[in-house]
Length: 347
Image 1 (tube, rainbow, N blue to C red):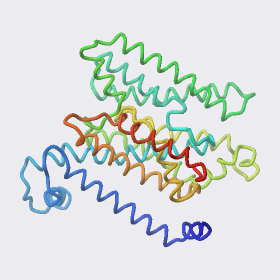
Image 2 (image 1 turned 30 degrees about the horizontal axis):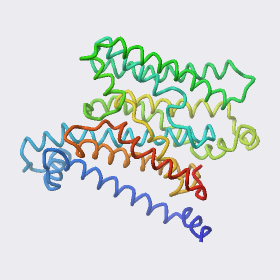
Image 3 (image 1 turned 60 degrees about the horizontal axis):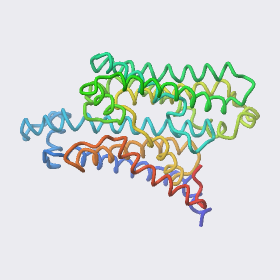
Image 4 (image 1 turned 180 degrees about the horizontal axis):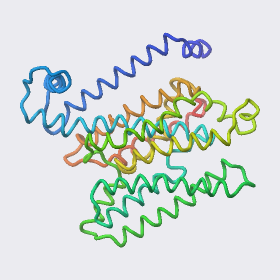
């Protein structure tokens, strides 16, 4: 039975069907997210507004409905799709590079670095755009420091060195965040810092998405184009080099790509955990460990997952629940279930 399933996974028709199904599910989720919220909007209104905006069809919906869909909900939907896909792809890449199913996109300190940059911007009273810029630069700078430490310590295993350096640098950056929280104004700055660190899409605009999209595409390109080599990288350095892969060149390229998309995502939405850890595991259960299929599956599942979580965050209660809380509430029990199901392969 398992052999038949594995054969079906590799069949071209199966892959086409899975692609079409994932596209349909994402489209259905996006339409549901556009129609659902505190202000009721029907699917017919959504279709009317999108038809008017995208195709130039006559507008029948009111100006209020148009504003709700185009200015409030559409930016959140697009941002959820982009950020969820990015974090999931980065998580799958890091897990393969470090050969560890417990690795997430913040293993090298990118989230802590972005968090410190954003917290510093809030503490200094900067506008939104400079805060996002500091978060982006902080994430990249943290990984640059970690990788520099890895290059300096050449006597140890390179993968282990990067992981340990990431833990140490992340701890220092976390201490810096805590210090700024202590020094911040408790009535103005501290609530803003806390809310940002928990992650949210409430203030995202289409302009914000457009600003980070080039960075996302630049970082995602090497991950997609080199995904077949990830199968060899996951075997270990010696085995990969024996098969013709130059790990000392490929590893920094993949790390740079995964770091770039993670830093861009965190700079816009704040720290949203568990997506890059959980979604790749689900993708492996569905399509197997081959990165030629695993990475596209992680992209689609991550986009749909964050879109669904954001929909719950803004409709489940009278106030919006930060995304970091919901992803932890959903992700932690699911991860424990994965650990308990020892007979099922999770890595």
